[in-house]
Length: 137
Image (spheres, helix red, strand yellow):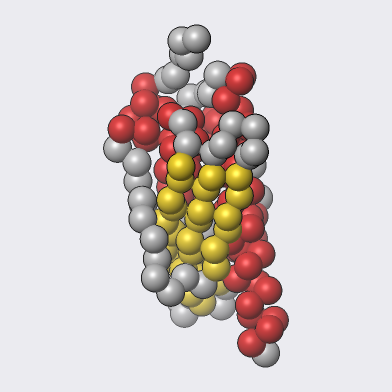
């Protein structure tokens, strides 16, 4: 089966942004799909803003991913890092699979589940961070 990927998808697959592991992350999100075998890890570093329009809010200062998967899985992982970087946690929690797919031009219908995984991995990393914050207090 030949899949029709946009140039943006191919670009993010061939040259993914923010690949790697963060050694001491604020939060980690790990998700997978048993049917297709894709596994995604998203690492975030959260900081509190000291000045400007987001003063006092927590933002995602650094974000990286590790993905074992297909073209769409890698491209959506790369795109989620671009969309979430420097966003407040509340803004990042609002990023949807539609946002990811739209930012990539579109995904073939059979690969839309990859954008779900990427959004879920980000949201799980934020939830992990928030859970750690409650535990530390």
